[in-house]
Image (cartoon, rainbow, N blue to C red; front, side):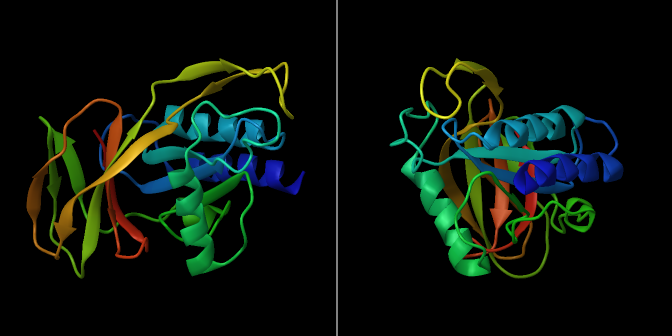
Length: 211
């Protein structure tokens, strides 16, 4: 119940600090590690959907694969999602669990202080190009693609019999280049995707925009 409550608090905190809008600079990046096989995950999935609807944040759902042996294989799961969660756990601690929210590449959080943080480097995507502003330090530039909203009828496992709509389930991630603090433009493509600017070794996320 603590995890479910945290998911709803997180969504409420986002709303408290974000005007309803679909465009403009991203206020932050919300990553949810989730699974269709996890009974505690649907409220968190719904909370992420509310964040997406409300706007202002780049919200991404990473479907891990370690629940796939529990009777239902997640239709969006990937080992890359599991590895990303493991790297966060290695860097910031807290263990591996679902559902887990990670804000701006930091520790898992459901608090208003995390939800209100503003990314320090400007990123925008238009006409298939990502424009990144000037700032300090180095970072990797990634293009993260995700599926369109998809309704899934779950036949087995802990959520058997439920039909759940999933939004922004990550389908892939590739590196576009490296940012060294100077303004730059990179080809990014379009569609259902986001560009994120993340410190090396999967550190803090300092800039992001939806395609």
